[in-house]
Structures are given as structure tokens and as C-alpha cells.
Length: 313
Length: 320
Image (cartoon, rainbow over all chains, first blue to last red; front, top):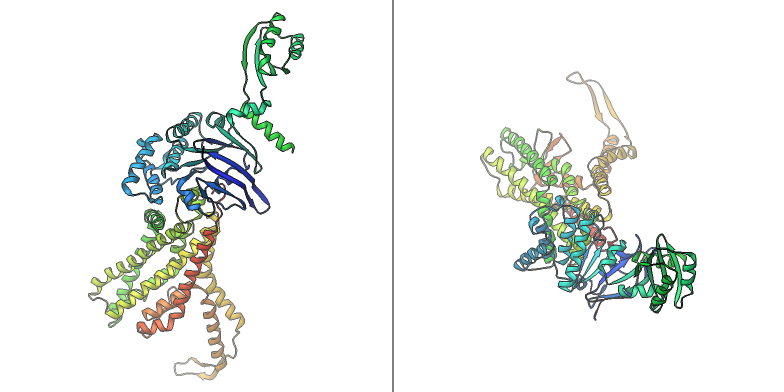
């Protein structure tokens, strides 16, 4: 699949402070890319550079075939940004805000009006087209913000913390909207966030950024494998009883690497082939299996593992 | 150009709809009308007076020129001081610059909108003043007077745009609107009030009176002591006046005041004190004051060029 974003040694320094440090990454067309990292990791700075709004100190990047420095205006015809905080005019109505963006994109009047109506419809804000933004809730503003980012019919859209400050209902709505747009419009989405759950349920690829450095770039489906070191996995077990002897015997099963007990659950780390022997060992100790399921790593666990590794140096 | 006009039309709509602009416009129109009314009173009592005296408002505490000297900086600065940094604070600047427009479209559009608003204000105020006074006087300005009014309008426009450019410069240079408004107020006070006080104090300190009054002895015809001014004293006073004037020439408000007064054929020395001089023709006035006009225009262009360059170099950072 074609790359929409390619960066090579992309670096941004503000004096002595290096906000983004030699970033190399690729984002393919149609992906929802989760850009993870704590506050100040360099996510927003990277997005600003990719939008052609901030000039890199070193390195290059191509967005939808355009160099971000030499062809920044062209980049801005195919890429959109929804900044972290409300970026629309509160004293204008939803319609007027979108219409203004359409004008800045040099869209003819008829096309612009159709597009504004369509975008408001997509984000479910048609009813409030003539209401000033200052009277909207934050969730409603974000919806109009997303519509504004789509006005130019972009190939890629950068959403910077789009659900920050939203209540759970609005968060879910925004998330579903992003998924819908990706599905129906084949829109490439870069979602910068420090909310791990949001990224986990929305994105199909993630990059973890810490102190300006990319410490992980992986597809979500590969993450568990990467985390468990190849073919290994872990099983969560709920048993009628757990004894020290049982744990000792489970550890002796061929293919099992380790066994841990947390609250009422038993976690067995090992290869897929060991499942049958594990079951037999449990039964042989007179215990019954109430639940047995493979347990995937949460993004939080993945993030913390890489984050801690990076911090530890 | 499309981006410039789009930004300009949006900004213009904001300007004309803002309470700030409407209040200032209302204030200027009301004060201008009152000064014109008093000018009419003077013209009626002094047969043969020029129509343009409606702008110089004799026998009253303010005239159009003085209104502009005092309120002109406020008008220009008020329309410009938060034009860019407000957008940075609200986060709308990154959205606008995220569109496929050239960056200078934004600063050009903002300046055009401010300029149109100020030109509208200057033209409408002067038009209203003329519109009120012509029926009251029963005669219209002659061609020469009309040209003088035209020249005054142009000069006032340049003067107001100078302050607009300074306001925009502050809004680009300072990230916070609170800082730019403080600098705007400081600039206005410096040029409108402080500099003239400073000029007087400095000239008095640097050129002390030399010589004195000469007592000619004995009472005069009306019983008063007779004194004459010594040539040394006279020379010192003239030197002091020249120094004071040179210092005051650093202020655009002073340059506007003396140039506008010259164009109208009056000399104006601040609130409440006016002296009418021989009415100079328009070419004479322009010839005598071309340097002042050039300085006002150059300061305006330099201030805008500085804000233009600074804006193009603005680094959009997280939070802008």
C-alpha cells in the first residue's frame, strides 16, 4: 500500500531543547495511526511539521507526495489538522465557520455550500448549522472541528487529542465518527493522544513517542506478538482451587515459561502447544477449570513496558 | 490574492460588528459634529472666514484636529493590537494557516480590513461634519477649500494607518493581548502626552533663560511699569522653542497636528488654545509640510513591513 507519510530523520529543536529527534516513520494510505506519548513527547510538534506549519531543524518528510518544506502549500491542500484545542471562531455559526474554511480553500460558492451541508450532515450537526459555536458543548465543537478538517476533502487528517476534555458519550461519538470516516472515505487518520484506550480501540498502527524519540512503531495486530517475544502467549485461568503444588507442576509443563497468580486468576506464560498439558495437570490436581482464555496485552502494558525501557535508558 | 480578500472580508465583518469599533466611531462622529457646530458659530461671527474652519473649531475646547490627535492613536491601535495574538490565543491561527493560503495573505488581509475600517471612519466623520454644516452656513466649500478638506482626509487616513500598523506590529511581536494592549497604551501616552511634557522640560533645562527683561524705568502712559525684552532673552526663548519643537517632532501626533493645521491654514497648540494664521494655499501648505507627511507615511510603511516580516517568521508551536 502507498505511503501517505514518510519521514526521514525529522528533527525539531527549539534552542537547546530537542522536541522531535530524528524521527523515521511511514504511514500507509487508509491507516488509522495512533501517535502515543506522554504530554510534551513531541506529538503536536511532529504534526505541525507534517502540516508544513513548522519548519524542521533537520531531516525531511513527504506528505501525500509533497515535501513539507518545499511544497508546504500543496501539503495543506491534501492534509488537514484538528488542533488540540478548539480552533474555530466562537462568534461565527457552524455554517459560517465551515464556509470560511471553504473560501480559504478557494472553493466555488455552490460547491462550498454543498460541501458545508454534507460535512455538517456527516458529523450530525445539521440541526445546529445556524447556531454560534460559543453556545456549543465541547463535544459539539469537536464535531464541527472534525467537519472543518474535512472541508477540503483531505487525503490525511491529523487529529490532535480530539477527545480531550470530552465526556464518555462524546468521546465514543468522536471515536465512531473517526472509524466511519476511515471506513467510508478511506481517509488516513493520524490520531495523537495520550489516552491509551482510545488508541487501542480506534487505531490499527501505533507509534510511541517519548522525549521526541520514536520508541515503537508497530501494527496493533503484531503488538501482542512483539510483546510476548514471538510465538508465546499468556493464558488467564480461573480454577476452583489453586495450590502451591499445582503451580509448581504447571511450571514443570513442557513449553510453560512462567506461572503467576494475581487475585483469583492464574496466568500461564508459554507456547500454544502447552495448552493441553496445562489442562491435564490442573485436572490431575482435582481442580476444575472455570475459565480459560488467552489474554492479550493492553496498550497500557505495552506502553509502560517501552516507556520504562526508554526511561531506564 | 483570494486568500487575502477572504481574510480581509472576514476581518472587516468582525471590525464593523465589534462594539469596540462602533463605540469609537460613534464617539468620533459625535465629537466631530459638535466641533463642526462650534466652527459654524465662529464662521457666522467672522464674516469671510473659510469653510475649513469647521475643522479647526475656534473658541472651543476641541477641534477635529485635536480629536484626531487625541483619539487617532486609540482608534488605530484598538483595531490592530490583538489582530494576530488573539488568533494565537484562541488557537484559530493554526487552523487558518493550515489552509492552502500563503502566509502573507493573513497579515495583508488583516491590514486591509483595518485600513478600510479606518478610512471609512475618517471619510464618514468628515462627510458628516460637512453635511451638517453646509445647510447651517448656507454655503458650500469652494474648490480650494474642498481640496484642502480632501488633503486633510488623506493626511488623517495616513495618520490613522500609522497607528494601525503599530497596533498590528504589537499583536505580532507579543504573544499575549495583555502585553500588546499595555504597549499600545504606553505608546499612545508617550506620543500624545509624555513627549510634549518631556520636550518642554528638556528644552527648559538645556536652554536656560539668558538675559532678562529690561526695566525702562518709571510708569508708562497707563501707569504700568515699562519693560522690554532683552535681545539675549529673546534669542534664548527662540532657541528653546526650536529645541522643544524638534523634540516634539519625534511624535507622529505632533507632526499630524502641525501638518493638518497648516493645510487648514490655522495653527493649533493643543487643547483650548488656537491661533489663526494667514491662510496658506494648499500647494504652499503641502510644500511646507512634505517632510512631515513623508515621515508619517514612512513610519506607517516601516511599522507594517516590520509586522509583515515578523509574522512570516512566526513559529507555530503547540498551543498556537
